[in-house]
Length: 481
Image (cartoon, rainbow, N blue to C red; front, side, top):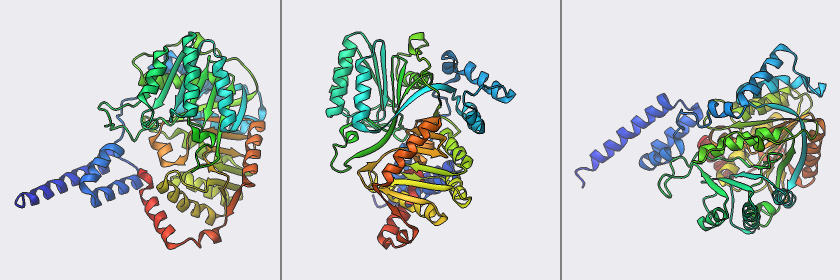
């Protein structure tokens, strides 16, 4: 054994070098992620290679959600028509105050085929009890179909309550489809799934492993949360399905999130997003049928449903965030559980602050993922130094993913401000163009300030060496968290 040990070491080193070259020259990751993976390979050669196989590989260049599917669902034609109207200057805005943001509409149309609708009604939820009461009530009233997509589904009290309703509706003849992320819902009982399927519902996992417990796509997670009922009502936002989202977890306490109920033509675009995800995960494709697109005008809120994910070369939601921030004249209010922006987004916020824009960022006071939390504190320091206001939410756990600009435009959805959401997760956000909705979100933000403490730059500089050490390590590995 001693005689062959040098050969084993040499083989491992050669393998590491070849992998390092592949990362640098073939994968073409951004520089920070490249350096992070090179350090992992240097310090833990064998284990680092295994970690890279699981967490570091890019998705196949083969498109997961194809233009062919989008074309069948009517997306391509609608997008091209709106692009032409904007380019020729004859796009009709119901609200002329939206004209300054037509370049943001255009960005999402070109970058993500995000059709712009102007006839929506929006209800904002920041409390889990109220959100799930409304959702379950709408499911109870479903007549044709129920489509649910959640990153996390638990078989706890809330999960069981929802299952009972879904089983009953499936037995009544309503078509029920449930899609969950295999990693996020890894603790979901197989018995729970079989019980729902036995009633006639369809249940699928996104990116399940080919071999049980061995999933090489574990790093690419469907973090989206969508619910569509009868093609008329849609839900989108941050709440998953589990008791902690109702505030029943002692570790987190009250769960502060933001979720939207939408009625109007934007539900058509939410339905398309669900169908694309479902068709990727299931062998039983959903094809275009009128009954899936029964949404009718219900208000005057402008909305684009924007998706992003590792299947695309463009970071659509992040680009939308940056465009919003750079358009700000008065203020930018942000709520996020994680604050790990890349250089482009960090620079946009610092430029806004230095230009006199009132930038306020709210983060939680407690971690649900320690390394991410310490990386958040590290990045917050730069914003504080530039002059931004930072608030630490104290009344439980803050999980909202919300941006509001100048009380006119906003974004609510599933994407956090971190590298994982921008590059690794499949996400979906509603970009909202409406003064009333934006002002309501501002009001919720100001209410949360009353239950937060403000973090000053002077106080930030007084943190201990141990905290600084944890921040430094977490920030170093944040590109691959």
